[in-house]
Image (tube, rainbow over all chains, first blue to last red; front, top):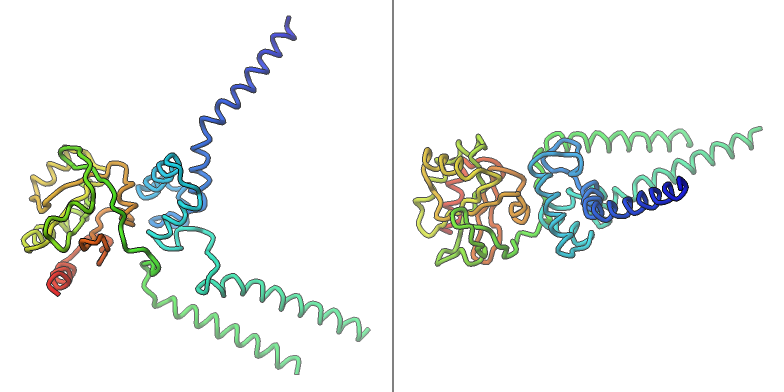
Length: 126
Length: 173
């Protein structure tokens, strides 16, 4: 009897989990998108973290857009068209951001080469 | 030779850092994106009094330009700039539309009673989403828009006499 009951409760818990997952699906998507957006009127906060009027409106807009069937990318494109690339945390790869993307890689390779050279020369000297 | 090469490399980096530092030191701190789309979609916005939804494009009667001013009764800088809006309301061929932002109707009406109503039409944006379509950051903000829904000028923060003169000049040109 107890075993049956515990199985039943277990089943209920699982159903409960799925039920709530559906309820919060939309909200978590809004969170996911807003974490990638910079709050433009705050200092160093994402839209997700901020409770400023601007951030709240953006979150509301994301929710509206999602329920009207817009995809995540469409929302980023829309916001970028209104506020520029600055609103997204990850800068797009284009001619303006070329140095930004290439420079760390370039420095990494140079650093690597320097280390290799140093080690190689040291070995030779030994 | 080896020392000289790394020395040159070191100096180049130092010069680069100093250059970036001084360049950004004197730069304007307000970020204004260059690559923004200055055209507004023809969105629907609710009328402040009647709650009817109005198309943005149909707000133009015969005017070539409209001013959309985002304001709120709780916003202190809006009080400061209000006299300039009243000033602008006397300009011919210019329609001034107020977009009441996250406000209570009573408070907004009292605000206009106190300071005068420069608006030809008042719309409302209760959740702030309409302002995002305009590309606004908050209140107050003022947009000069032509009848093709292009943003000609955007003023972030309260407008002043200099801005009023600029708007006058833009309209008359």
